[in-house]
Structure formats: structure tokens, C-alpha cells
Length: 238
Image (cartoon, rainbow, N blue to C red; front, side, top):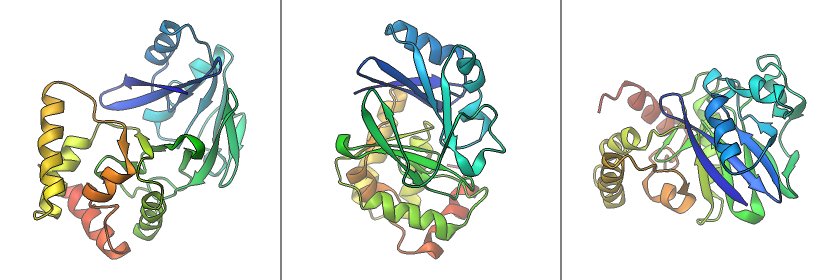
């Protein structure tokens, strides 16, 4: 399975998933760059998978659908996403070229947010729920929901690759160094991420092992601590 990063908008990542001659576009915030990336690899986008309803994740879906792709996304947000063909909920499976992903319900950032987990390929697409060194803002859910999501992500094997929806890692790393100033792994990762972004290098994907060591939200001991850290990050100016 080949996974291709496609930068869209200001700091979003859409993803192309290629396997056995089939191509999925995941969270295409814009159509043109996603279609161009697929065409450059000789592929036609047959499916579009959406993690949640926010426009920066679904903005290109209808244009890509007009070229023949079918759209799958969260059943709980069907009233907010135009053009859904397949409604997905916890425990459902969806496939690309025979490679199957299990759908996770991970509410918090939005009420119906989902993730796509390829268990046998140690890969998960988390949208705006789990970021490198961060988590999504609690726009429609609770800290308890997000903490439950973090516990679920943390239980995955450490080598699981995490593909999220934004290049937020530098800002997240700067906050993490304030949240856990004595965490040497965070300080080291901040230096690494700073160097990468100075060279305009992407910091995604990350891994569950790296997040266990350096993500202050994944490391929160309970929902109360996560809520405190989320509020602090929302106000953080670093």
C-alpha cells in the first residue's frame, strides 16, 4: 500500500492511498491538487473517505465525485456532508484494492468524527483527532471523549504509523515543552521538528511510540488533565 501526502490549503494534508490498482483520496480539502497528485501517479480516484465534516477536509469531495468517485464518511455527520454515498460508523470496514480499514468512532473535535485503521498494515488515519504532539480542539465534544480516544490510540502497537490532517507539529511541540518542561524526549523532538520545518520538511507521519513519549494529550492521566492542557493550548501563543 502506497500513501501519498498532498498539501492543500494553508496547512492541511490530504492523503492518497494506492493499493492493487485502486486509489482513495482521504480528506481532500481541495480537489485540484489531489486530482493532480493522483494523475501524476497514473491513478484515477475511485473513492473518497472523509473523517469529519469540516470544510477544509471535505471541500474537494464534490468535484472529485463529479469525476466518478464514490464518497464515504461518518453516518453521524451525514446531514453536514453533501454527496455521501456510504455512511460509516464504529466497527464498519471499508477497503481499497483488498486492503481493509476498520472505522473507529472518535468524537470530540466534531460529534461524529471517525478514523480509519488498517490493523494488518499498522496504519491509522486520524483526521483532526490525534495530531503529532497534539489533539484536536474540542469544538463539538468533551474532554472525556477525547481522553477516551487518546487511550484507544495509545493502546495501538508502537510502530503504528499515524497520518493526521494538519502540519501543526511545531506549534504543538512548543506547547508540549511548556506542558512537560522536564520531559527530555519532548525537548529533543522540539529540536528535531524545528530543524525539519526550517527546511520545509513534513513531520507526518508520526508513530504511536513517538506520541506516547512526547504528546502531552496522549500522556494526560485523565480527562481533567486533558481539559486543562487543551484549554492552555487553545490560549498558547508560542
